[in-house]
Image (cartoon, rainbow over all chains, first blue to last red; front, side, top):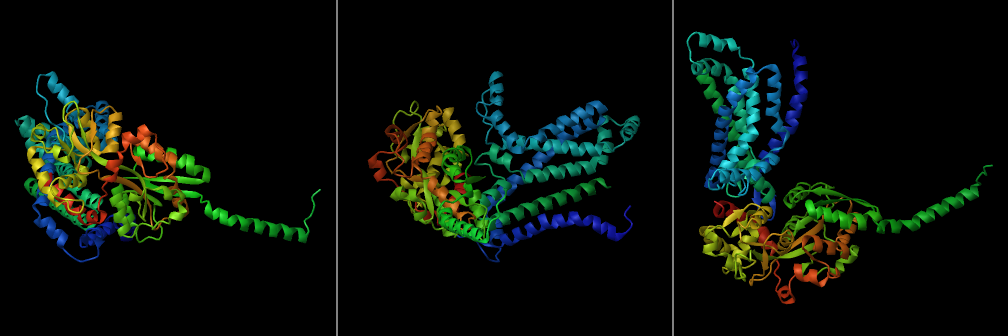
Length: 280
Length: 350
């Protein structure tokens, strides 16, 4: 236990200094850029204007991109939690030897970068890809999978699922299995035991895994670009396009801040809602 | 036995050394040596630069080429971000013609002294400017699958074919938004200084059901699988795709051939200006110019490249077409590119 206050401050200092240096200061700079003006041919012109934020708020195009991003993030988070919870539960109840193998199997996809994984999906989803090959094999007509929201949905789930499973598993490991057994011995069905005992105890893990998955999806870049195609737009690729292709740093900075604020706000709302719901 | 040097002998040797050093100084300044950092595209382009510029022409002079590989948009961002620094991270920067103009207008590029690049006297007059060395060029054409489209296209207007579009056989490329709007403008009363009429024309194409491919590579794949039959593309790409067995033929639009020029410039805050000049001169050398033509299908920008006639006719254009070469208006593009891209993203792709 840290007894002296000065020792505590000293221990916090290196990490805090790094955060200030590499996160807070660049964010401040980005915020300042977002108040500048973009003049075609001249790039960024020093100004103090809110016109970039007004444009984000009033242009229906950006509202629709933000809506797509939020819907995708909510959908992916729900799907990952639904698919990840049973997997995590199975993982934490497996025998020690088998568990090590299973954890390795969950971690293994993380060894491959997002872009490479998306490239793999491109091969699978192409007109002459493995999915259409299987469809043809079973007599079904070929489907257009590439450059669709469904392709992005599947692609992001494959990226996020290992994070969700590992986060849930670490929390589920801490829950005493006798609590569920007690519920079962008192006449609860397995579903009731899960809903009334395991799930409430696992809520901190569900919340952490959900927040992680939601944030990762809100900021997804490679998967929407590679699998979504030209017509599917999410926020991170739109920000990158403003900064890199249009050299419009002020508007790119404003979009970044909007994305960050919306992500933080929705995360905070979800936290408050879940904590209120389960702290009764 | 060691002989001791007298004071007179020492002074003579010192004077001789100083004289020798002084006589060598101008020579040392003229023949640059050391590193040069080249911001360039990767892949084949960088490999050819290494194989035919860096190794045979610069390494013997003691110039070490270091590559900063990225897309040109990243290089432009870097030039702008480093504008206020006394020394930037790149010496030579590869950019498109419009990118180089944009960077020049923003004061990030050095005005070049042609007397320090002996090969610059061979640069084709139409491609010359004071802030960059044109490296390679090609022209915009129509690619089509001759086994599916029996009548050879003669105009960009031939892409506006409702029957073909309905079945998704006509494609445009997302990253080629600027040239696609430009092509549409050229058949709808617009010009290289007015792309606006192209927007309405493209909305007609959208209504017909044109397919949008994200990149040139995605288009190549669609042409290869014969999913797409016709598109607008650079002739150099068309030649390379033919070499790769993709079933496409090349047609010149009667509206004229608009040029794509890849240029190299020197950053205003370059650390190694002498080696940068040596590099810019070397890219105009006949041998690398010929190799880029052979390996990438781009035309030489130097008149002394000496291409074989069969190669010249395959990648180039006849004299009558060359007479009508069109060069983009860079000032118009600098002013309008952001709104053109915004329209493409928000209206055409929506």
